[in-house]
Image (cartoon, helix red, strand yellow):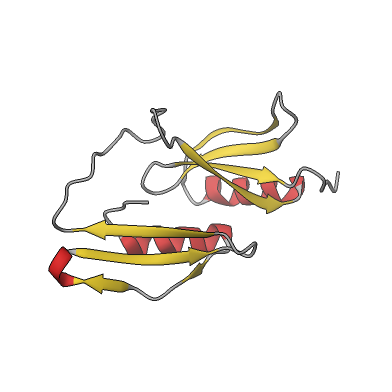
Length: 129
């Protein structure tokens, strides 16, 4: 995931979604830096920044062809509610929910600091309500 600020975005995913931040990798010859985020499930997400390329920017929350959002399972429905409330209180935009979708998922849709759409999802078989 390209970003213009590795530290800001990494801290967001660590604070609100429990990701562990890996060490910063720097390749000065290519103007490239990155950090891996590791989630409790073992899933990993690489955050990248560049000084030599100019990745195309999009309006926050834009629906576009290709990758348009990522879904992160946060546990129970109650946990979706808690994380969503925490993000809202932190000043982050909540686009939808929490709600039950037509296909049966319990989720909310929020924007990270770069405007990427993140679905916060309850595990399908886990409910504490």
